[in-house]
Image 1 (cartoon, rainbow, N blue to C red):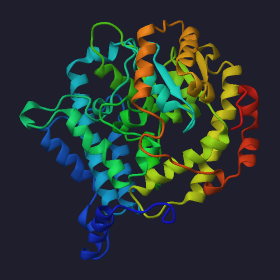
Image 2 (cartoon, one colour):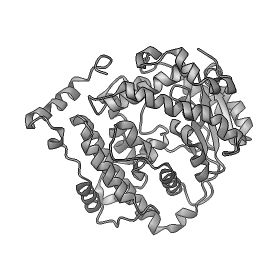
Image 3 (cartoon, rainbow, N blue to C red):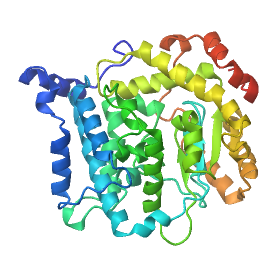
Length: 407
C-alpha cells in the first residue's frame, strides 16, 4: 500500500506521536472491554445491560475489543476504532432500553424489504441511492445507523446528523482517495454493515482489520438488524425498508431465514472490473487504520468468497433454497446507459409503480452527482494480483448463467 498511497501529513504526524511514549500506540489509546462497558454505562446513567435476545452479546463484545487491542493498528486507527466500539456500545444500550421499555416494538412487521447486493463496482451504491429517492421506500441514513435512539436531552449534544459527520466524513480526511471509491455522508443511505455494528458480530469489524480470536455470526447479526429496523420505524403502519450490502450475496439462505419475503436486487458486472475493486476498497479501508495490509492474502480470500457467492447464487436460486421469484437482476451496463429504464424494469418485476416523479428525481440526482465527482479511482486486475482471464475463468459459471458482458 505504501507504493500506492501517501498519508496526509496530519495523519502521519499523529501516528508518529506513539514514538514519544515508546512506540506503542496502545500506550496512548488503550482499548479494554471492561473500561468501555463501564464508561458507556455510567455516561448513560447506569442503563441495564439487557441482551436483545442475544445472551452472549457481552462475550462477543469482549472478544472483539480484545482482538482490536491486539491488532497492529497505528495511533489514528486505534482512535477511530475505539470510538466506534464505544459509540456502538452506547447505541446498543440505548436501543436495548428503548425496546425493553416498549416490548411491542418487537411485533412491528419488517415487510418485504428491498435489499441491494452485488460485488463492489457493480453499481450497488448508485442503485441504492437512486432507489432511495422513492418516497415509498425508506433507506436508513448513516446518522440513524450510528445513533438509532435519540440521545438523552441532558447530554446537551448536537443532533445525530452533526454527530454522524465526525465518523462518516473522517474516513476521507484520513485518506482522501477513499472519496473516489465511496462517498460517505451522515445524510446518505448507509449499508447494513454500519447498521449492525452494535451486534458485535457483523462484518464491519472484519472489514476494518484482520482480527484474531473473533468471528462474525451472520445469523445473530441478521436478528439484531431486524430489531434495529423495528425500533427505527414508526409504530403505525408498515415501513418498506431499502437495504444494501455486498456481503448479503454470500449469505442468501441466512438472509431469507430472517427476511423471508425480501426482494433481492442483485447487480452484475464483469468480474475483471469488480474483483480488483473489491480488493482495492477493502485494502484502503484497512490502510486507514494500519500500516500492515496483506494485499496478496486479502485478494485470495476475497476471490474465494465472492466466487463462491456469485457462482453459488445460481444453485441457491435453482434449488429453491431461496425464493428465485424474489430476485431482480440489474446489469451494470444497462444501469449506466439508461438508469430510468433499468429502474422501470426492476420495478415492474417487483410489481411496484415507477412514477414520473421518481424518474425526474433520478435524472436530477445524477446531474448533481456526476461520475468522477471526487476523482477517478483507476486500477487494473494486475495491480491487485489478478489477471482478467483468471478472474473470468474462476467466475465462468456466473458469467455464463447471467449473461455478464466483458468490458
